[in-house]
Length: 254
Image (tube, rainbow, N blue to C red):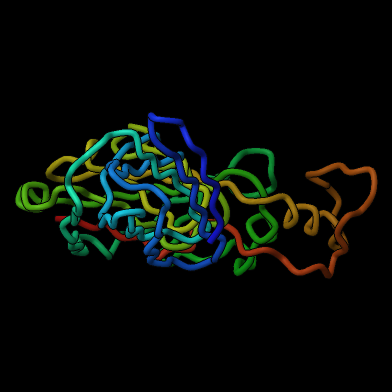
């Protein structure tokens, strides 16, 4: 764990906490302040939410579930006499785990076909089509999923879990942009955009440049997609996993 502590005089304190690990961890952070209520400030979306805590005469113990490579602010500005607080445990239920064939529309001018369909989410590098195998750019994955009225009523939040993504994902549900995801876990809150019945899902995935640069170095290539002043990659360089890798699911949180 890494942290930075900043005092605000009589107004309170701010702690920045970072999890540099590639896996989720549960942290019981012992912070050098008491008499103030801790609040979690999420720098990704600007949301402010309560956290579980327990105070001692000199310190406050804050429990945090931190995602891989996560970083949050814990802000103490509100005085309180409440010595402890426990958030209720959230329960999650998978609502949709099976999808119809995915339609993938590739960015024009990058050597890939206009569209393809696939029943299985896998890296572009597994394709035998050179235009897909070496594709670098943005590809739009579209599909549909159905939710019942009871599923919406019984769950406080509806979440989209994309599994693994290489490397960025813009999420749209029913034509509404939800968010841009750039690190694990690739999960988006889609509660405000979903409806009972059929829902339209679009995930625009952008990967990195190396695969296209490697593809342009392959023997027999007569039309290069990229231009560089010097060859950074050779034809035999290893390709990077790319695209929406999944598994994708819709999850309800009570």
